[in-house]
Image (cartoon, rainbow, N blue to C red):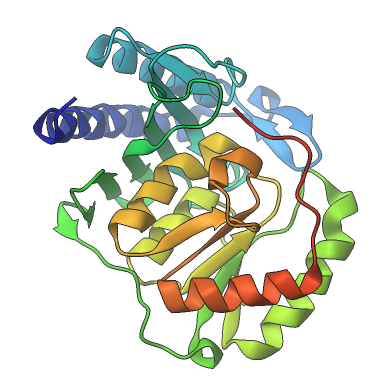
Length: 280
């Protein structure tokens, strides 16, 4: 696929995400408490998540018929195809269901042709924020944008003046001890911390310079795939805590080069053990 073809495909994905975003935003007003299911502690889903995923799946397979779709609700283990879409229909569902506008629709395209047994490079990332009328996108070699305007990470402030985003490991609360140990190492060295409840929003706000960096434990590929290329194309860096592709473990670290390296050094001081579960 040429860069021109990837750009054209990105534009079509943006249009699809806009359409699904209109559905998600309108459907919020019709959701009752009885419509909400609990998948785990602090982890919720509604029919809006599933319907949005259905709409995205149908649209993406129409755009690229030879592809497959890894998506949070109905195909989280999908590994087939030379091209694989990685989809989160609503990232930040708890925010969405309680009326907070910080939630995202995430679509990434992964190139699996060279090594289908492991994660390949992400070549497209689109993150829609319907509650805030924002659309982020990037494609390989094409830069990153918010609402069609170029964006760039902030990497000019010393660490002590930086605002860093994070979130608690709510799905695995047994990790809180390790998380708090790292928090206590990072917090005294920075200006402040923010927790907004959507990994995709955190990544996009690092990409546009709202936040200087971001770290979190135990995310899933669909939480981070789209945002990772948006940060890369905005001039920043993402990886897991051990410097490997972020989608493999979901232990995400992101920032401009200077902030990323400073946070990576603090993480290295803690000697965390890389999780055995590797996503493929």
